Image 1 (tube, rainbow, N blue to C red):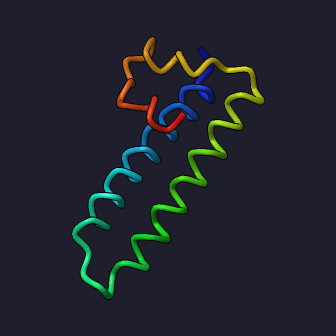
Image 2: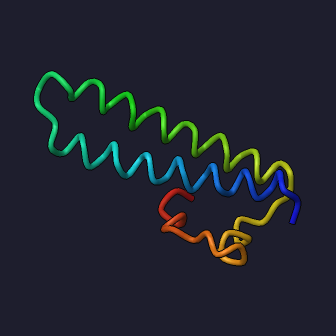
Length: 78
């Protein structure tokens, strides 16, 4: 696997983790912070969608995550 492909997979996993954190923070947010976490959630979803599109365009198989030992509930993002 190319280093670029590995970097894309790691970026997807990081964005997925960021999304989980934003969702958790949203659930416990005070009224003043709800908009902030809403934007974070939307931004992370858009980033994941973009990265997955990029991976597919390049013909990289998303199952490579497992082979790299990077699996971290990425199936939720797909």
